[in-house]
Image (cartoon, rainbow, N blue to C red; front, side):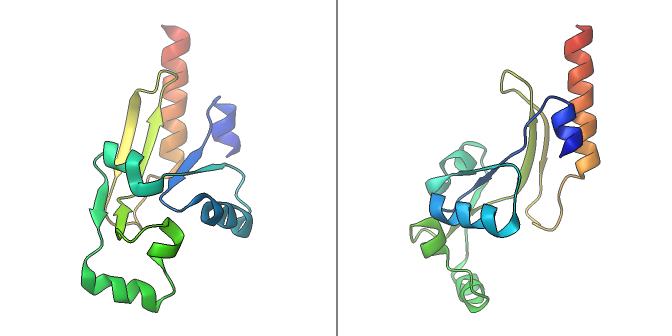
Length: 125
């Protein structure tokens, strides 16, 4: 986080959880960045990142305590594919990383590198 803010950037997470659920997540994990609620996966759909959880996995999720209808406030059983996006000041995506395997994420060092490159290009141009 310090490197991200030093680059003049902000970290924002977007979740399909309803606001009360996302607030609980922020408090539980003591997050120091903003977490926005994307009810109905509307933003994720704009990025083409929404999939419907297959019926056979719904029971698996429920069995480990993940209650999507309660946390998302609907019974669509839709989830976003995890993605990380670095955007410039105009909202243009300059770096994107999307992987259906939620355990694979863009390394924080790569995010900082993209931010620094963006900062260099805006100050030298």
